[in-house]
Amino acid sequence: MTPLLSLIARRKRLLGREEASTPRDILTLPLEAQDPQTGAGLSNTEVKANILTFIAAGHETTANALTWSLFLLSLSKEWQAILADEANTGLSGPVEDYTARLVATKAVIEEAMRLYPPAASMSRQAISPDDLAGKRIRKGTLVIVAQWILHRHRLLWEKPDCFDPRRFLPGSREKIDRFAYLPFGAGPRVCIGASFSIQEAVTILAHIMRSFSFELKKDHVVTPVQRITLRPKGGMPMILRRRDHYPASAQVARLYPGGRAASMS
Ligand code: HEM
Image (cartoon, rainbow, N blue to C red; front, side, top):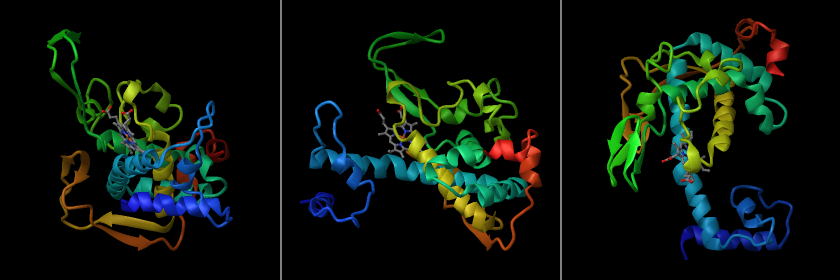
């Protein structure tokens, strides 16, 4: 039995004992999931496949989104202060509400995924001849949609190479064309973990920002490389400093002319 299958068997035994201390985590939830129509549950192999997908498709992508967010924040003391302030007030209440409350944090992550999309390209093989924007596509041709190019296209974005999270703040975010920004893909194969990963990344980034300021290690040259996901070559060495005071809320108020209370609610 593989380690994951024996873990599943152990958890099933624990669930059978109905102890309150059984964790309600990504192992328990798929084991308890039932088809609403038939009441059928998932087999052990299906639970295993789902957990492996979570790890393979969801771990490194989100980790890279966070890494690139930290890199871009290291270039902007102003946005570090805005996020620290937002985290100081917004990290309370139910976790499900974080993305609605931590709007600047979410905007930074979305802007980071624009400039450094963790999935920098997607490919499809044409199953039959087609026409694509006036180009003849033969059956079997590999067609690549490169978020790396799309997200920095001069016809689609103003100052495309600049880090400006305001593009993703409420009021501007809605104006972005659905097909100009594809960090999670689109169509029938769109990422199933999109909402989960945004919630996860917002929660983690807000906790980091509340406690630390940071700067990139001196003389480190950041080079993106695509190894299935888009990673920084040689990592992202940072110098962390614990925050001993929180910045004034004025920074957040400046971003939302409508007033802080309204924008943060
Ligand atoms: C920032 C984090 C993430 C990014 C940038 C990302 C990106 C993507 C992209 C671009 C696709 C479409 C690929 C294509 O069309 O060829 C995709 C598909 C997928 N993602 Fe994610 N993903 C992320 C997080 C996650 C998480 C957390 C999970 C796990 C729950 C996940 C599971 C999947 C699965 C299963 C697919 C395939 C869907 C299908 O083919 O029907 N992803 N992801």
